[in-house]
Image 1: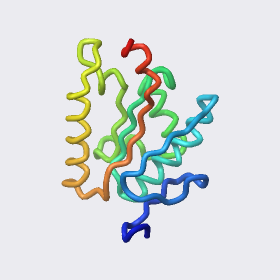
Image 2: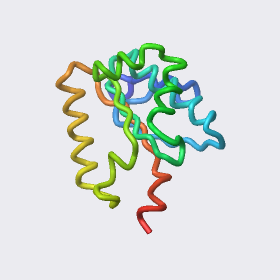
Image 3: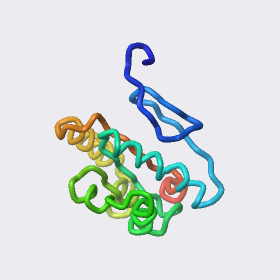
Image 4: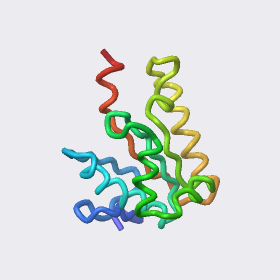
Length: 140
């Protein structure tokens, strides 16, 4: 425990356990490097009753299907978990954009909705990933 708060297993040996609300960044060179981090990260969250949200940037994967397939290789039940509402995988453009323009208030509202969903649906909390790489195109 850190400051009396229960620590959460990240699923990543290099990071270990962290308190709720922790944010961290990774640097990677290849798509496989990224998957080597995100697959165990989400797998651990799902095993620990956390609602998982993966906002897929098209700069990392071509689409949500490829991200889902990557999870499916290590988490064969991922389709069932998606159907049950344990994990949501969404494209960055569907999460952050409205009519091709960044809509921060909509994105913040969606995060609040997912957090409320997680807490009212019996999950321990929310585990998420999203890359800011796409922003360089939209925020010029």
